[in-house]
Image (cartoon, rainbow, N blue to C red):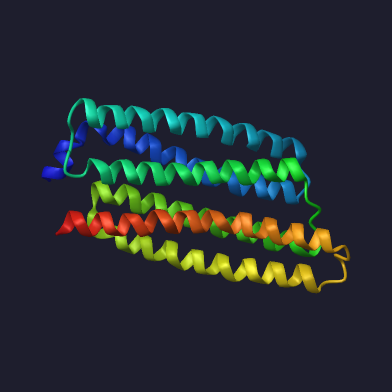
Length: 215
């Protein structure tokens, strides 16, 4: 309760930040699906959305940082809170980079692999969702943090398996005959799966922060 009382006036802004991270995960899933389904206009809209979300998240994160230091709030945990925000902000940055990379390179994804790419994006969305839930719990119900972290680890593992399946299919199918296309598909499978890796990285740090709070 002492911890919560000290950051009570920041809870709203913290929630706003997590909302932006969560929305970014949704846009990522939508962007990959729209690209795979050939919905170019909707994909362009997703690019604009993630650009705006990234800008808003940066503004909110800076404002929280300013208040933490200017008002001398929670000095014993300030570094952990800022680290959590910055690591979570990296997730949004990575989502933006991946979607823009699709727009720049415009990889040709064969029909037999599009379903797998969409499923991989969906798993990454689940990773981000549970990462956000873990982060919210850190400020509200610390006992729930590890439950959500374990879900993130599970989805990250599932993403790794699907990423490997995608790469194996790309290099074994006759549908993709050009080596450069195979390599490009492998690269984008790795890039999409990277979002779940980023969520896992946040949770690795969050688990340490949670232990520190509970001891």
